Image (cartoon, rainbow, N blue to C red):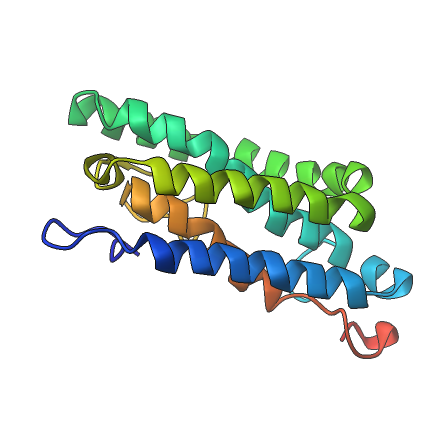
Length: 187
């Protein structure tokens, strides 16, 4: 990551917004074509069903809404405090992964295929609007991240990187969906 914000070039807000919109359109396409049985089928490489994994993919956008104020705050405190904060979060990775798993199981019950698209629309619209409003200097501010929480978290991430993160997360998990094929063999 970290390519979204460099000291010499402005952040490519249009590219980030396009990625977010493409994920949104793809989610609607997946939801429209998914059968009840395929949504209940296991995904590939996770313990989630396809519907639970779809919610988890949407949850990535929701998480970013909560991460942005945190990056604003932590990027303004002394670097040693930010590193200690990231280390404390890394130490809590086991409970985080459990909550992440269970939350997606429960979330899919509330935000099932009928509500997931609207949640995604609202959240992505909010992220794009905020991205457009962010001052350029703020987009380059950064903080340390708990890299043990997600493979796309880098040791240090800028605000622009955080805005770009949910599309990476979405595409990673999209490859694990088994919405097409034979439900009996998982694919």
